Image (cartoon, rainbow, N blue to C red; front, side):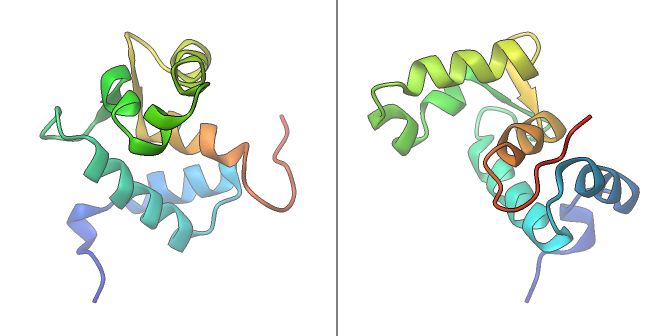
Length: 102
């Protein structure tokens, strides 16, 4: 069973982000579910805060974790937080396959 459509991105936004990042719709949906799980301080889960990113176990254990979060927030985020589109754009930099360029 999958998540209901209401728990996911609007279809037009999903298509736009897939086009910009190179993620498949299935990959993007999995990222969105994870994004929502990480957004424990924001019930509407419109964004992740710097603190929520730093609370990710793998980030907390990484000696460069705080610096990585700082770069993500400074380069992609705003007001010490990052929305889902920004989150997907960051993760697309690590995607296997063709790079998406401007």
